[in-house]
Image 1 (cartoon, one colour):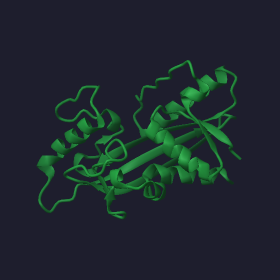
Image 2 (tube, rainbow, N blue to C red):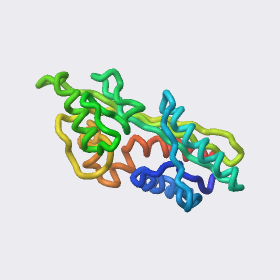
Image 3 (cartoon, rainbow, N blue to C red):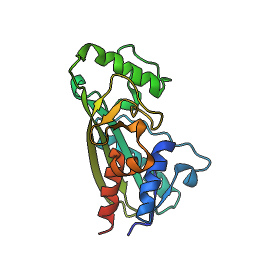
Image 4 (spheres, rainbow, N blue to C red):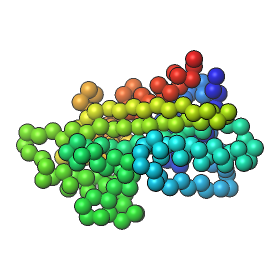
Length: 210
């Protein structure tokens, strides 16, 4: 039974979420800085799929831990927003979405949200719903080098204006019709019950119990 793993991400928001879910299963999550306090590991997301990016993150950190003599599991993730009206864009490029105005690499989440709204504006009608989904892929490499993969997705809609102060990424625009809130309006309890990443994490950790 897995007792701990390294989360191959520098995102504080994702790390906090992973730790909250892992705690329910009695699993300890180590951050990159816990294992590499004097080393900054940057992993280019250059694969053609969520699974490929998640696997690259996990493999890169796993190989580095092996070089240092650590015998630890590593979790890699990749996720994105897929908008039906944009044929699935921004997809795997969600974190680097540049929009029609070719946003600079320094663009913020708010900039990317605004760029998405501008691209969708001509496609909206008074009665239309812009359907979308949040997608997540997880790759866990166990200490022996074997791999577990899990995916999850939650359908929703893209609102014409942001709502809520929480979350990150496209959360202020992504409306969950079951909860009737955007992800940025979710309470912590709602996120832990309905969040698309949380659903994948629970599936993965439950798999490891057997």
